[in-house]
Length: 247
Ligand code: PGA
Image (cartoon, rainbow, N blue to C red):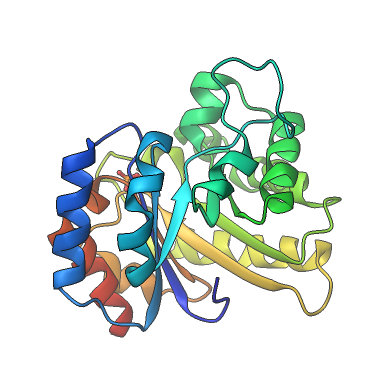
């Protein structure tokens, strides 16, 4: 992964079929996206192996999650970080708010997942974010600090975090410029307090990023890219967000 460029990462969640993903990748490649940013696409596990060759020409292939269990064994239904690496994944989303919500992923589990990803040579991208209630209660910074604490003792060489306010995910309601600026600044400061001096840091914003608002969001200080859900499912809108890194 390149730690200087902006990262535009698509998150397909539980969407897509093989043919659709193939068409999407072809359409994206045909637009010859600029090399000004790092492009990543996180796909459901069954589609990773087939997408690998096409994605290699465009950017990086990612998993949406990894198992908390590191080694092969009797864990029916689980997919390990090593398996994901074996079929070509290069990064993994960890702790997306949907996983925290539907699968009760707490910091102890997430620490295992981050470690497993790192050991399998997948770059973990830790997702953090507060609920609307927590923001209203002025708890946003406390919540994010607690979520980031999982990275404190893991001795990672680099840190990639996506700040995704839960109230902004899939709602069309983007956080305000000042809310993004101050939270990204806070995340940077927190990560620097954990990091070795030469650690690289990327802090992405996620939550209703689209072709119209991307250029503005990406211009906010300490925003190193975007994690894109809905707008990453169409080549046109995803390519427009990639283009926005040129502004
Ligand atoms: P959204 O999702 O862009 O559809 O809001 C972002 C995410 O959940 O990563």
